[in-house]
Amino acid sequence: MACLSPSQLKKFQEDGFLLLEGFFTADTCVAMQQRIGEIVAEMDVPLHCRTEFSTQEDEQLQTQGNTDYFLSSGDKIRFFFEKGIFDEKGNFLVPPEKSINKIGHALHAHDPIFRSITHSPKVQQPHFGGEVSPHQDATFLYTEPLGRVLGLWIAVEDATPENGCLWFIPGSHTSGVSRRMIRAPSDSGPGTSFLGSEPAWADNLFVPLPVRRGGLVLIHGEVVHKSEQNLSNHSRHAYTFHLMEAAGTVWSPGNWLQPTPELPFQPLYS
Ligand code: FE2
Image 1 (cartoon, rainbow, N blue to C red):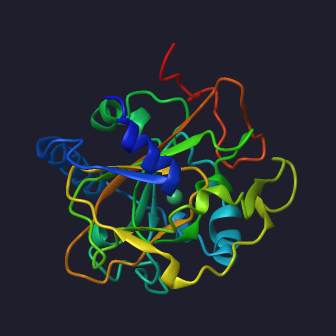
Image 2: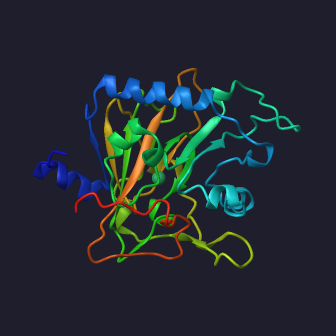
Image 3: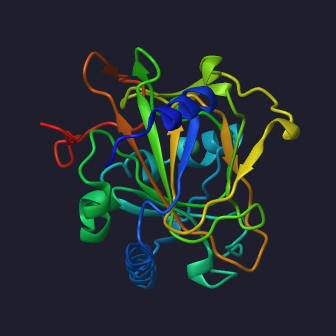
């Protein structure tokens, strides 16, 4: 990865995010899309696994956090769906390829295309994703001391305000972490709970960040961001994962994502 220029670094430090246009070629994006098409075509979703994904706190507790499907997905390729895409019998109401909010969390480990793009970073939560309500990544991926997790978000297709691009509150990465999702010990109660709460961020604080296909967005672990539901006719595929600074930090044992014997975190540099 090429170094950032001083002005790019300054902008990242001020805003908490930075867009690098044209970081990946169109061919690379097409390869990712084709591979996702194949993965979705082969998808066989058991009824009990039809878990909806949302960062709304209540729904998270009810659907993700309390389900083994989510908590044990860190080293697997699993599917999380948009709301309202199943009927009461669990049948798809929309074409399966339009039903998915996110595919996670180990595309980088199990698929050669995504492995080559992810390039073995230290900590990963890779997924193909859709609508996400306002949050800081540090709510879910927490290191001590703070500020050592970096999100990378790749626009596999053009992302616009109409089809669900990212929105940021510039400079919000300097105010600390509002809430944390804590994983319960494996032998006790509900899977996760929250410490703190997400403030009711005013809509007018957010600015959209349209990205053309191939653009890369760097996301500070504590900047507040979201993506809106895609209500347009244009899909908006993105591939995202996270890097952690390992030197001098501790990966929180409360994080939902933990390395496993089958899939330990891999160093980007060794
Ligand atoms: Fe995020």
